Amino acid sequence: MPVVPGFKLRGLRWWIIGLVFLATLINYIDRLTISVLAPAITKDLNLDRFQYGSIATWFLLAYTISQALSGKLYDRVGTRRGFSISILVWSFAAMAHSFARGLGSLSLCRFVLGLGEAGNWPGAAKTVAEWFPKRERALATGIFNAGTNVGAILAPLLVPWITLKWGWEWAFLITGAAGLLWLAFWLPIYEHPRRHPKLSGEELAWIERDPPEPATRLRWREVIKYPQAWAFALGKFMTDPIWWFYLYWTGLFLDSKFGIKLSQLSLPLIVIYLVADIGSVGGGWISSRLIKQGWSINLSRKTAMLICALCVLPVTFAPLTNSLWTAVALISVATAAHQGWSANLFTVASDLFPKRAVGSVVGLGGMLAAKTIGQTLQRTQNYLPIFIVAGTSYLLALLMVHLLAPRMEPARVDS
Picture 1 (cartoon, helix red, strand yellow):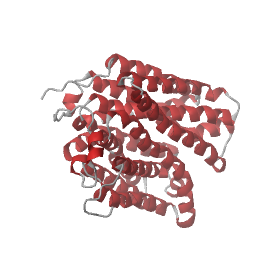
Picture 2 (tube, helix red, strand yellow):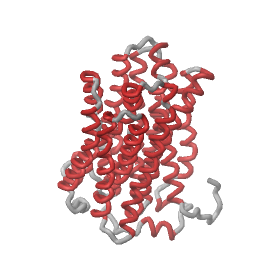
Picture 3 (cartoon, helix red, strand yellow):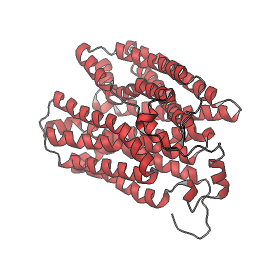
């Protein structure tokens, strides 16, 4: 951004969320590169399926641990430094995959990648809390969360092309280096709204239109005392593994059910994630629109989440249909609804807690159930029970959120 004395950039908060969108996009490309390249890597490194599964487990373990640690990091060092640390860690870890030559080195790369990549979401949520008033936060969250779907679309398009030209090692190097390029824009552009030289007074007033919050720093052990924190954590814990199921098992499901092969898989996956992209922004738009119409934050968020939870229900029929594109349509709607749900759920954390505590609250969510999905499929080879859980978990999660935060009131934090 050129430095012009007295120059103020109009709509700066949307430029900021655009950067977070790009970070999220890069995050997903780096995450999915190994999934796209699994056949080539397992063949070159002589890895069997059990070993490949253990590599994925190391990533999920690190990711779950880092969800809590990275939230605390952001609350302590701030958004600008916290995001820089996260993307440096995951970018170098992604590039290091190109030098892996066995189970141990590849597992280590995945573990470090998980430590870095988990920081994207606490950092993104904290950025939204700092740069947007409550009425715009769900929409802003939907925008940055849409980067997951764009990344999921670009990965199977870019990674094979790079691999065919230069080899799978270069695919890791090039995709990993994208994070370093992003950092070259983030560092000179991002600053806290109150200290940003390019933010107009009018936009700052809009960002800070909500009542001031207490300058209290919450420690992780203090956050878990509040039922509002458990409302978010349980809602996330019950629905996050479903997204991972779609991310890692959709291709295998389509192959198992309809005999679709890798060369035919691109179009169904592109359709699924394009529709999911619409749901990410649309889910956030619904609650923001309701708030603008005078609805309370409590009713707006929960109404949007209820709509998303109901839209997920039909996915239970996906393993029962004999039509490929009917199954794709059902999964597409479900993934879109999940993204809309997530946009509102992430925003709940910033609705209920002071901005300084947002990173810690977001870090509470885990994905410990992801391994259970793989074990169930390995044991039964039956997708129906998984899809039933995927279709019904959101309504149960919404009930838990409502019971723990019935009026969506901010946590009363003592000074």
